[in-house]
Image (tube, rainbow, N blue to C red; front, side, top):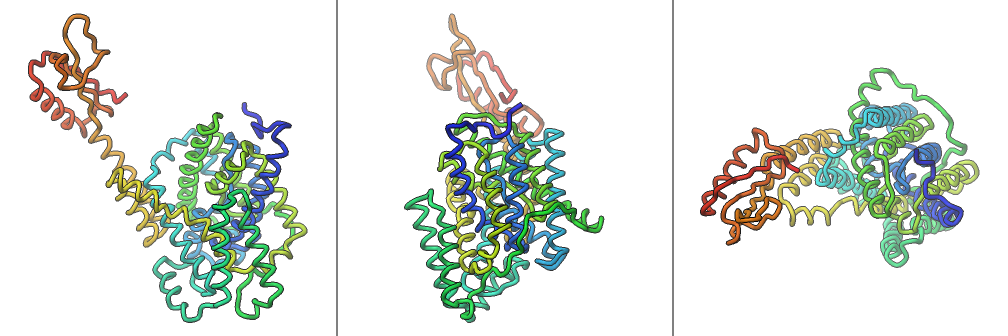
Length: 482
């Protein structure tokens, strides 16, 4: 069995610890922003870094994937719980905790029954569309925060757009200026020096400017008081019928995190040359989500951006996650007063810039060039998530996944090979159709198992091949799909 913190040695311990400090600098402002997106207090985002981070780091087989609340999870929490309780109150926080516990239980069940293959139903086009729709919805909320306009963050996309447009005459000039400067630093900074924690620099600079210049009196919104103290073990007090109501959203959270988390883990393990155990990773996600729900946090997923940042720094272990958990605990114990004057426009800028890549513009263009049907799948998922909601969006994504699967199975690629039937010839030495040395034998290989939906496709392919090649004596069909 793989030991915890695989890959950690005396030689790399110092560099891994330094990477953990950088992860802390990236995660604190983002998690505060994601907690606000989810309709939760800042402490919920910070709590999700402590116990869940420790549990995940000690259980997971991936050496690099960083587990933390992310934009997609925050948006799903907001959209699924927003209609059940008032954002920010005790009932809302309890529902978010219960949702995380349910998601954790589903992850653990998936690990026990080895159901990681279910994540394959959320193909890349579906994830591009689904996550892109969530990202655009979040971006509108952050734009409102950046210009000092109040909108109903729990409403639908159309309602948010309407609120943003109606609020434009009342925008706050200082908020706009602060946001513009923050976005400029973040955008140019990550190109000039990607390893520098620009989000933390922006946060500290903006907070200092607001606290010393009296911009709060000019209408610039700030984070406000943040409760001090470590996370404590609690159980969400929720009626049993509400647990049932939360199951669909917990399933959605689990499937999206499962698909993205396993995909990212496989990608980095192949890139860096180490092995992973998908079902153990599912167990780690399950334990982390259960810990988040039981310690005042909310749903935890895989953070692609933070994983990429740690990879760029050369980190190849889970030690940075543990260091970030310890640093967050110290912040909660002794530094919450530092967070009180963080300006909301700066948080909006940090989150907005962080989720821009999730819009998937390049991915949509790539799909348009490579496969128009898969582009259509991504576009439908994008619009459904944006206009109907996250939960209906994930259901539509599953239907489209099945449609796409049926389409591929019913129209498989068929290779037609001609083999010379002269002395010494063999089916192991194929030649292309049309070759003058292969007039006698056809080998027809189908890239999918033969069943009723693609039988006619194979028949037509055989008929076309036989009619187009003279002097065919034998036809060999391989329908195995291997």
